[in-house]
Length: 136
Ligand SMILES: [Zn+2]
Image (cartoon, rainbow, N blue to C red; front, side, top):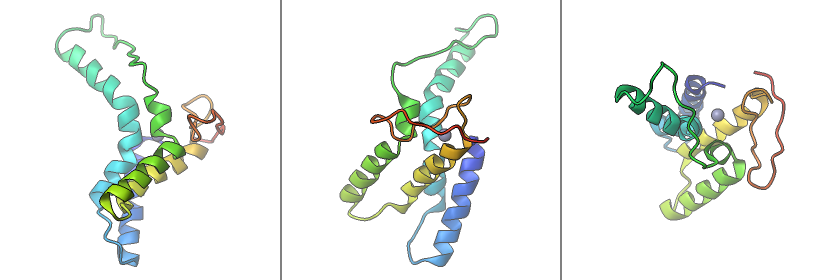
């Protein structure tokens, strides 16, 4: 699913949660965490590509393919990484940070909606590369 849709689904979920519970969920932060996996995965490449374009480092109109050597996409879309961050954040904040559930929503939406031909979500990374051939 594309990034704007992730943000809108998270906003709808956060507004619904805010109206129906006593938990104080901040909608803006929930939306941020719902787009975070794709920002982490694609943001550095986009930022460097834009920088190179603005500074004249790109010739011929083609953006360079950048590889930072970091598994940003699978890390950002892993349920295990999410659970680790969610747990550590809850311990440090001494409360459940409900806004982080936007990140979980992103992963849960991507699992059945990303296909083998388009970033199938390796949601058990780094333990397993299992993924589902979803329907966009
Ligand atoms: Zn994603």
